[in-house]
Image (cartoon, rainbow, N blue to C red; front, side, top):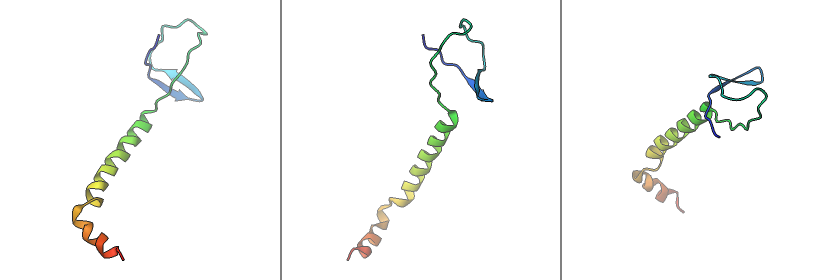
Length: 69
């Protein structure tokens, strides 16, 4: 059974934000996805797209020709 649970990491322990339907001392396997990592990745992707609009501009090709020996 797979259940998606939001939790907070405090003092070295993951604390679920809502009760879990598990017996006491049940073993579980965790996969941790940090929203901060997802948000950072989105910011980086948006920054790259914005940079490519300016950086990869056809009008700048004349400068590449000037730099070619």
